[in-house]
Image (cartoon, rainbow, N blue to C red; front, side, top):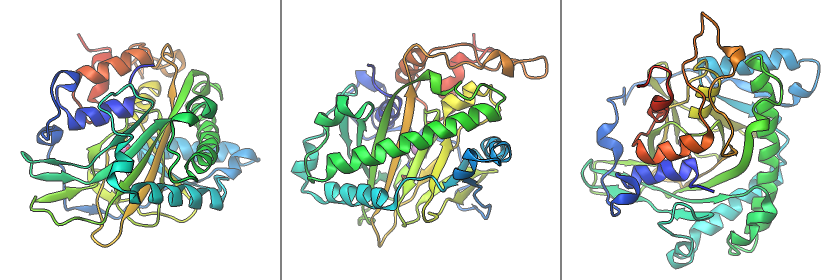
Length: 349
Ligand code: OGA
Ligand code: NI
């Protein structure tokens, strides 16, 4: 299959001009709009009870979910059913993986965006005077049997821990897709029917390094080119989301995962839900880890808004387009946000 969306997004961050230019440290920061950097929002994060979706309160929870997607673009999920030992184990494994000597980690480095597994390094943007501190290991993971042989064998716990976490998180994601579809007035399996594989990024942010650069980011402001992203954070704060024009700290809440609306859900929902602009800071004392995962559509899945969401008050914002077309477009449009969708707008030439 073609390069996945998150891979493409990362490549574009690191290598403007995509495939045709050699790697460079320049990237998109100069194109980022001026955002209200220092102003913090004290907004709170909506918390959705996943377990309650399976009982008589489902309609109420579906409504909450729809409101969170529409008003905030992100929410936390509690009672998600991912066992605590599974969560502890994926973090232990991630920490052990990134604590290994660089040579061991670099075995997974490849410039090939089509690779089933890839290490992405921290990098400096000398032009913008910014250091982007994240190192991440990204890989395909569904079905597990198809990909597991590509995953690291060091630390020895890797394959078992990753398979266990990913099987659990996929179940959570599919439950959410059912509720999100219903919140849009669609069939419960509307989104699920579009699914293809699953992709994960184990993110590692070392404690801030001494740097002569002006600013160190964990990861710079971006939207995810996904339907939704499920982010499992450890207990170290760092994630920020743009909420009503201000950066809001999305601090870890024990035993929850964070969910972001991505660009594809913005299109599927006919722009009722907006993809979330977010970034991660680094911490000067503590390392931080997060696990971002998402199910992606099959290549021929239609992503444009369904008929049901289009009427005279809500004309179609996007044309019909396939996931394959979107993925190809990602290579052509250098964007860190939903501008990736611009060429699929009905008003686009
Ligand atoms: C991502 C992401 C934020 C974080 O992986 O897309 O935005 O807190 N991660 O690690
Ligand atoms: Ni993200």
